[in-house]
Image (cartoon, rainbow, N blue to C red; front, side):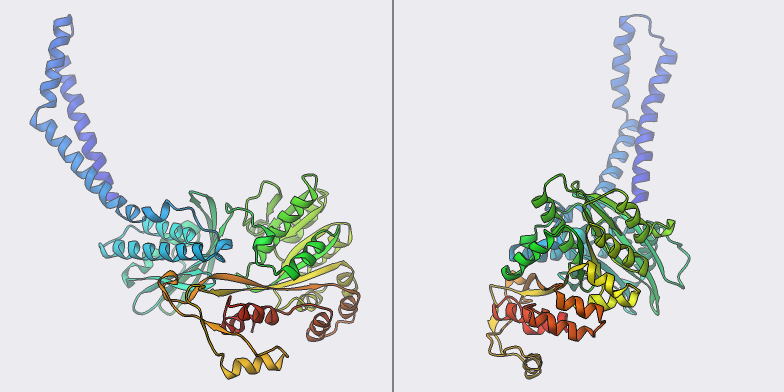
Length: 507
């Protein structure tokens, strides 16, 4: 297609040169002296425009232009129905109608990409642009490019589950990876070691930050593209799926003037979404005079209400350094994207003790496990116990399609696991059916499970004493905390999800 565009431009230039040359030759031999000469000039121009040479040049240029434009825009025309729709936020997947729209757009994208590849030698610049744009449109969090012996599997992670988009012919793999490398600004010829990079991708709803990871495999380089969109709307705390019995206590925690709130969970479990929704609630309830500052990597939501800073590890600007600088700006509320090291952890704890409400994420398996995780990083237990006010653990599970769910009987092993932790096994239980609305998958969207641990005097004693996580968890349950598994079972009995899905994400 680049060759066609070049030929098209050349054809137009030739046509203009014929016109300019003919006009110059006539003026050279027929100087303009009076109105009669001007009139003859007009007739001569008309005759030139009708000449076979000029018409041939114009016809050639129009033909090349039409063919080039047709081939170049064919893929985009196939994507027209998708691109005209607003991009879907990962926060909206709990709605069944939105999940159905995701399925329809994903199907359209698959058909368009397969048709494009089947035409021969594809333009990888266009292909990668449409692939990334399609992933953003359907609300995917990741794009996976995995080389196999038979070809390259391209998949999106949508609703926390990998959805295969297409199998790319083997001969196109190197060109696809090289295009990704060019965008990520990494070394093209380096294929024997992992590389990381990122780039900005413009969409109709604003820029997206694409983080790229490249890894050598036995069949070529594998690539994972993580999509962080900064233009989606700020989520509402009441729309995240907090049960009523948990929402009010959590809002009371957010009303506290100081302390540290931890959000734990696996990658892709919605931790950052919970943080932003909590900041939105704080801003709404406390008013415009409350100063909210964030330190992130990268900035995932562009919010004009907050003062947002992005860390840059390559230049030495880390979370710890950013947090110390933000503290000098005198904010009321601080959000730290993630605690990754001991220095950031200690600085965050000091901020919570010095009159700031700080919210952050930690990679831990449960709400109770956050404290021992930080103690292992080197945080003093007595400081952690004094600064902490709450810890939240969350997971995202696939939701059953409400149009085709059916009653189901769990496996004996699943019931035994419930009995082992003292949870009821009476049911009711439901399973996936399959209908056109859910593309016969039985699932539509996702729903969230939350475990909220409020730091009480008994929990502070556990932190100070560095007791095992399981003991802290049991004490929190006795004081009223609903565990993740119990929250999942409640969703199962309500027909929202399946017991197998809860065990899959909770463990």
